[in-house]
Length: 411
Ligand code: HEM
Image (cartoon, rainbow, N blue to C red; front, side, top):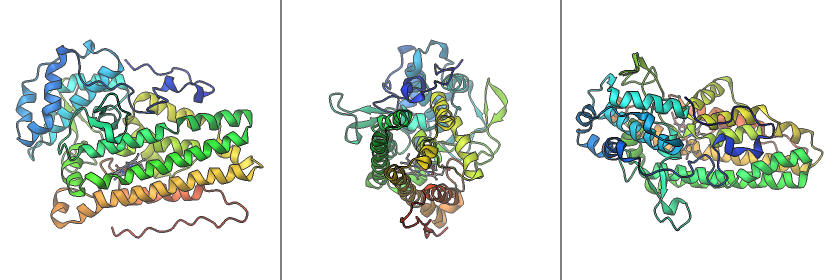
């Protein structure tokens, strides 16, 4: 069973975003995330929403053993499936990471429905970006606009309310991206009609979008303490399998598989936004980085994964720009790439402050690693994606070449 996404690739994909579950208003976010499931699923809802608290008092695991096996077939529609995924993901991660005595088997009352719900959504059964961002935010005041000043989380993770800020900032980044969706549509439409004036306006819109996303990303510092992120939220996001120090053999899903399953943990790298921008602008990554970026698409909802493939295999903006006789087109295209380089520079510095620096603290080093939750050796990986973005900038006559300035990061 899979969710309703398009079966055939539309020729002009930019006119059919809804078939990929992408909204003109909120982009990749779920348009109407639910706060509640039907009454039958109350045991999931009660436990999921209180899981973080129960985990803190070491009482979550015993509650999971009492949970009844509910029939997930009684869920109805994408929104209910998404909320169910988030609730069960929160329960499962709190169950696994409650204390140092880590269980090897996830009980069937969680394992069976969570596995099938994940299949329906085209996701893996692990806490992923859908859970902490795409289906996580609701308006505080329904009559006001949806933005960072009017957002709260639906299902708290450990460290809440401090750690909520991580999800809320990312929701705002997704909203920033959503504001640029019409520009993407305009870019492809104007290539079709060879309207270069409109193309330039679309590219300028994308540049502004990326700059907004960068500004929002740096707002992480306002309310999220790196030590809380590193010691509380990150261990909860952790997946299981070869990349995991604590559960290297993986996790057995009772009633699903006697062989342990292995999945990497939640990471903002699972946001489709930056991968779409790479695909639109034609940024090509190194073989290693590309392999990782393709692998994490398995942690994106099926429609969004399909969308990325469609953009990559459709008409090429880069080729169009390279062949254009209009310098303004080339300049506007380069400005988008420069904004993306700046985004990646800021983001790398945020990741250093929130992961690398706390990991260099002597005590922390014994418990956690400086790996990303996505399982990467992240500093060289993030330097590489940034470096390849720099390399994509076109050399124009009379322009000073863009240099890949080495960032001085003490690993
Ligand atoms: C506290 C804030 C953040 C931290 C600590 C952080 C950390 C990381 C780390 C360690 C990686 C490497 C992949 C992994 O193993 O997980 C990564 C990748 C990535 N992150 Fe973040 N991140 C943060 C915020 C954000 C935000 C706000 C975005 C915006 C969408 C974002 C987007 C990405 C992307 C797209 C990648 C893939 C690499 C690339 O395309 O250049 N991250 N991040």
